Length: 119
Image (cartoon, rainbow, N blue to C red; front, side, top):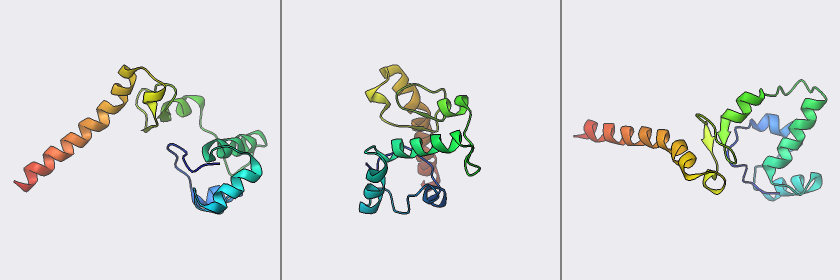
């Protein structure tokens, strides 16, 4: 079990409701994950969420397949992902460049604006 979920937005209270009461990457986190399955934390958590959806747990409402597919990019491309995780390991270079281009434009525009403000 690891502490690298790539990119995730998790409420600590929500995660605790699934049995994890420790900080990701801590020894307690690893022990909790190992008791369940020997997976990375993101896979472990995905299994738990899948079970919650199957039993219609009221604490969790799954996003649509479309939203899930467009939220983040890793092993497949997304039109405008909120996050990317190691896309260079899985996707063609053109897709990786497309994913990085918009955030880099924002960074450059912010940097240029701060230079103008300080002049």
